[in-house]
Length: 77
Image (cartoon, rainbow, N blue to C red; front, side, top):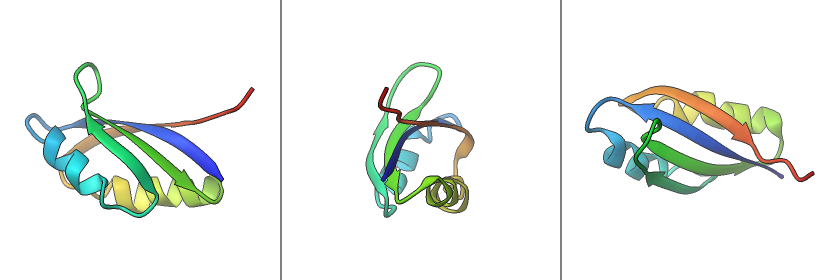
């Protein structure tokens, strides 16, 4: 299982609706609107890195109002 945080920038005023819509996507375990340089932070999981990439590109980035994403896979050192 691969887990990651996805940091999202949105259009002005869209953070809450983006977080709400993303929280309904399968594989997303948490989506919160936040303040700071990013507007939404998502925690997601997938079977492998390829599936995580598909989740981000095909589903999360398709949500209206998103301008940029940064995916940070979780590592256990």
